Image (cartoon, rainbow, N blue to C red; front, top):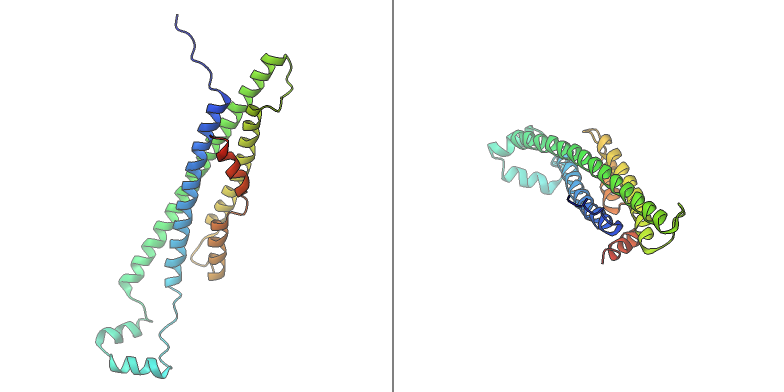
Length: 203
């Protein structure tokens, strides 16, 4: 009769957890790039027209008044082909950001399962060794505590990202977009010191 496979240890669960945390970081960075691209494409439509009232600009326009230049000025200093391309890129960025939110949400559920597995493993180990359900503050238990702290931070980070993505629209103002990009880059809910400690615990 084959022996039952050994249950995963708390440390192996922790290492798997941190591997998924690394994936979360990759997704967050990718989401930031899509957000910046969305901002850049939307700002293209908000470019001011060429200030023809300026003496210097008037001289440049007069000396280069080709049919192409005339058409460009009459079109409000925008190219139809470029505008269509920008709209396509905007829709693409929106789709990528929606996909990002879905992927991160699924990843958080996987992290939650690992936290529960580690907690159950710690509870079982302590029950078998002491005959009680009192958790001891040993090194393994500290891994579980760290997993809970990191998971809670990432949930808050995800909630911020989701709110930003759900708020985006063609009507989003320039200051709003700038603020969204800044917050996504700063990630105010993530404690760098705690994350560094978590990575050290992988060694």
